Length: 486
Image (cartoon, rainbow, N blue to C red; front, side, top):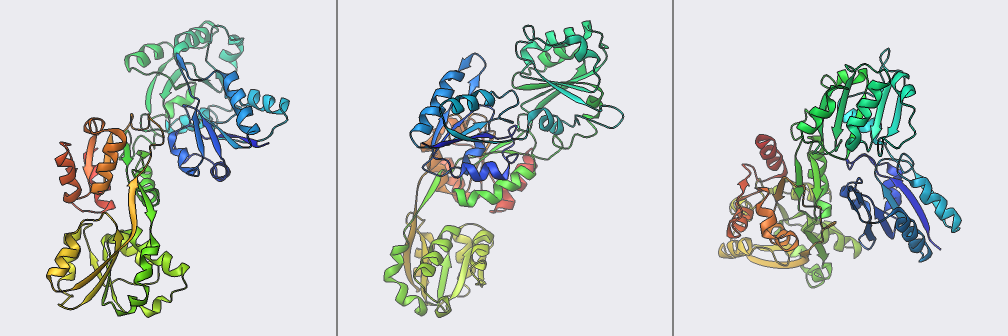
């Protein structure tokens, strides 16, 4: 018998997940997740974890609640550690209590991991504090779904004071505002609707009880939305920190390996973007290729690295085989700042550093150092461009090229993950070719596209994909291009 974690994943921003939730997701062997739980949380799963989408969309329910309950039981009885991922908090209008009761009936162990709930967090991202001294000393959360049928005491709700928050109630916005006004609430009471809060597609409309429905429909808002009624709405502009970020409104797709995506993902999020991470490249290590060279490493004049993956696979193999790197006397060369940083983290300071992330730039730096007869070792990817090796050999150098890893096509987190993307970032020809295989060239042509440099750009051009190229061929160059465009 397995067990089940009922996990609250927060309101949509992939970083609004608790440390405990992220840790437990890493232990799961099967997960079931909802529509309101962003796909970004799937990055915390192990590669072999089974993933089941059971989202409920208006008018299109993939699974009924009974089917979800049955599936939880079945997976647990198969011995899985099951993560039931729910948007917001499992017990706040999330039907987590029903799932827990079913697990108890079946004798299945479970734990509940609370999540950041949307009535507070979404309003925060909309510049609306749910309470405020002397203005709102309480807040009250209602389900707005099927509002006409709910047993809400509208007289009490209209006169209780504080802030009123309605979840899942957009289709009943007119009913909610009408009932509150009929029960004595002033028609001029401030009211707001925040759609898809904490994500790049967040959209907010502010009005009064009297005109909020008209304004929301005119602005083409739709579910999922949160309705808030009360004087705190007046702060929505002054406290509007999120929508003022430079990349707010942008969903940016990064296509690098999982290991290489972290730095740029965090910087994009800090700039206000929502990030769709599609690891189009997966790294298949081949450290054993170094076996035939390990006794020769001390004889090389230069060690040349053209990627972070090359650095890591090289040094990991040496470490695993108890090789003392003090035996290497070569000058180290790196392509770009990321590769330089990876070498420094291994306790070595590279002497030759290409400013741009292209082989041509590295050769321009190296040609002032190398001379005919120099021995050069180049650990890199199996399918790397031949330019650097050919250019160094033309200079009269002896180049040993060792394929310490190869890149293979990655996988999509799910079939819909690319739908909401606005801009795609490509950092190598491999990311271009692999993304075409994963999502199709026509899907990419519908997006705004940025290439980190001209080599990547030429690959896009061959596919008929319009693109912009960065002025600086680095991560910082990508970020600057995005901010300038937005």
